[in-house]
Image 1 (cartoon, helix red, strand yellow):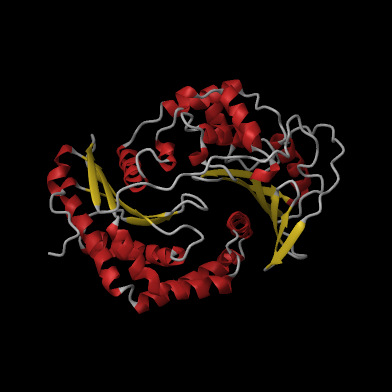
Image 2 (cartoon, helix red, strand yellow; image 1 turned 90 degrees about the horizontal axis):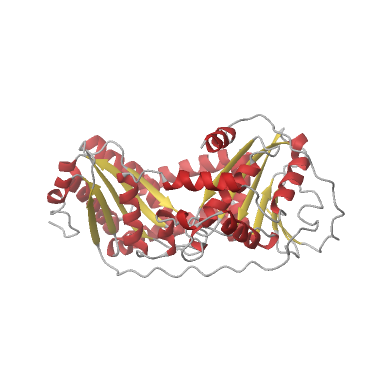
Length: 440
């Protein structure tokens, strides 16, 4: 446990920790790349399958550079009976990454991909790339003790009321046995360093990686020989479609707590489909509107929030409303949300509010365009999805404007399959009896 605590503390340090570089091996002959340049973003598809996205800074290079590595494997790809394997493998990889020359390392897990984000001093960039190269080309992760400590750590995490309500919502929206729900029911007791190493050797290969960087990578990056076949294509099981009954459903679970945790959610369009930006607009409007309606006007909850959860690049996202409330206020707060949903389905978002949101979006996109870290994260997602609007502001606002008229359709479709999950004290049930989609 001391190792884990030290590991997590280390991830937030800004000091540079230097590791010894192994003797450099002659790198393989460079494959002919396919390079596409778009909006100062160049995309290279190497013959070994590695996708590289570079953001051109011109001559104005900053002292701190940014780098994102996407692994095209997420928690929904875990083998049957081994839920938690991708996360456990990536946690050990992050531990190794944290001992490179990177000033900052962050790791995020999604349903069908994983992302590592780095900040690196420009003077250390090539050495950092060599260190990253060595880790990815390893034949095995020789961290038996760390693996066991991480497993014990996860097995002893408390199941909070909020987590119970959240996992319950995922089961309602996607189905109780769907791979998306596996993140809530990991099989850490079935895992060990041998399982981790087999999975690492299978998924950490160039053809399963996307790299976005603010600096061009060294020519030899991931081209040197390794103790395993890095050219073999990574084969992952397809994530099955969701299979749940369409229709409104509310489920609550009694928990030992002094307030209720509430989640409302519905599945929306996939990342590459029409309706994604309409849902994004809807989320931004609802986040402000429900705050005013539930908290400021009626005082039924202190923390209403609306999220647009992308579970992955090809996975169906979810529009999610979350809040806590006193037991006796739970049903009334839910009905306020449902009433606002129905109002938007009938009337759409007021035009004045749409224009306010669009103006904020323009300012935010302009600000993000000046932030190199945000630029690289977006470039990585562009490399994963191929969606031009991620990097082209004009295309983004054209699509957003066109999809504004789709908002009533998005919310109408969502209401037809809306799921509500509540975890609260024993008395909560009686205050949910009046929750309904019917207009009174």
